[in-house]
Length: 348
Image (tube, rainbow, N blue to C red; front, side, top):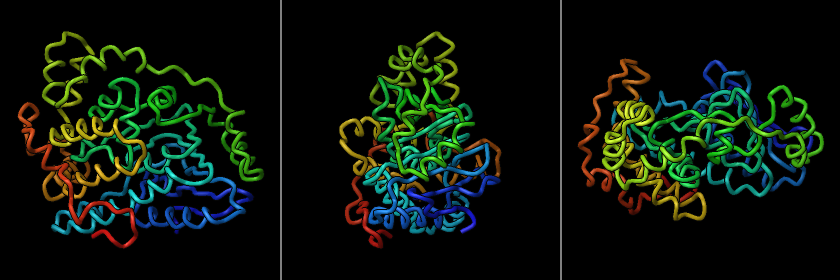
């Protein structure tokens, strides 16, 4: 496949995104190819570890390739998206649970679907160009691909802040928030990857790591924790509106751009996610939302406004200060027989 290069090199299973002009956005076929490789390499004694990287300097993987999702959703073919998300989440779970070390080298943009590949391994490497984010609320989705599980484990209320504002994380903040483990200057990556391929010795990553540059988020912790301590989106909005600070005003501005329904559900998913001990329950909860996102959510309108027409003027289903609690509950109700099973071929 021209969009992704999957092979064995030395003692490493190697995955390289190879569509840099598209910011290495992940298609459905790429997702399935990654899962197939994980299944093969789990049983292959020659593969001591997996190394994941990407061509180009702008992006590791800037998200999922959503053009097909938009077209099918517009045609009211909701089963396509439901199948895509079910298969993608199963791959995410296998990456998280993989029986051997998984190293990812995430330059540039790592967002959405890229987080699902790059941020669930055991050795997650960032450098000076790294920009990690979960921007789904801006297109009417929730942070998914297991991203909500990472957000739920971020310090204090940082997860709520990142999920609702889609703020980008540089190397230091990515490590602070739990999306990465190691800072290594990008000039050192090619030689390190070559050594990993030759030896299969993941401890070389520990030896190469350097102290990460300090990002701004740790210093903002008191303001973030105070603003995002509420149970609902309205609680957050009320606190920010009552706070006379540049942080509060800038944060309100960010929230005003995003889908209120998606933000309300994101808060609820992160809150529930703090009680999960592994990734699968988080993926199952995310799937309740994405299963309904095209038919009952803001996803189609969000894609239209941000990516298709690019007018940046979405007509969300709810006003920012008028999101009914029942709307959040309805998007996150159990799916019954349609619940995520993590079994191949059993979803729509």
